Image 1: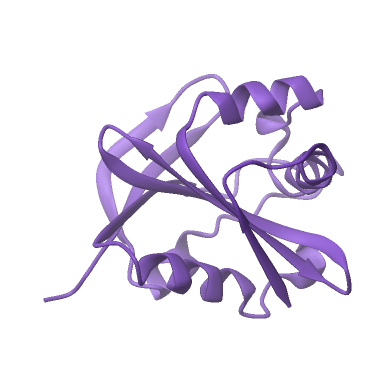
Image 2: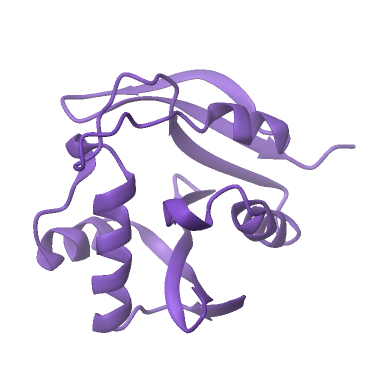
Length: 154
């Protein structure tokens, strides 16, 4: 596995990440065009990208960004490479350099992906990594999600 760290994704990386995004996330979160995906990225501040390559192909992506003076993350791994420790490694790598990390996680299995499969909530995965579920929720026409928080144990 190769991890490429960058502050700016190139066009090829954006296209490949968008394919993974649209295949793995629920229908309601699909970006129809590369411009839609770029607009999403442009709405995030101080981006730091980690592009995962397996067998010379982009297989996943984690990005951190700053929102309200806090570090947040988004992550996506191709389904055929999930449950192999890749996401855990990436999150561990990021948490080594911060005291807290936030994310939004769909906490139900009520969503469907573009291919018709049910979207399986990753909430148990994040809890296993030490994230705590907060009382904050994101509710809009696209998604219902809960805020998770990881922080350094003292």
